[in-house]
Length: 83
Image (cartoon, rainbow, N blue to C red; front, side, top):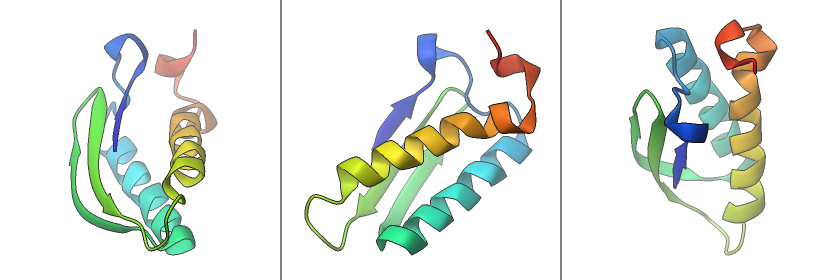
């Protein structure tokens, strides 16, 4: 799974953002049964190598996960994400 910020803008501004992302990923894995084999968090995108226990669970779960991750900085009140 790959996800990139709009216009290649940063999605992780600091270590707190990265920790929040990994916590959200952990919750998503607990809920869906995903297994993460590898990940790479860069400033403007991330890569995940995941295994899903059931067929066809990745699309709705990934969409929900991506949305919740995208909203984390806004919920935190980070002005860097406002437009």
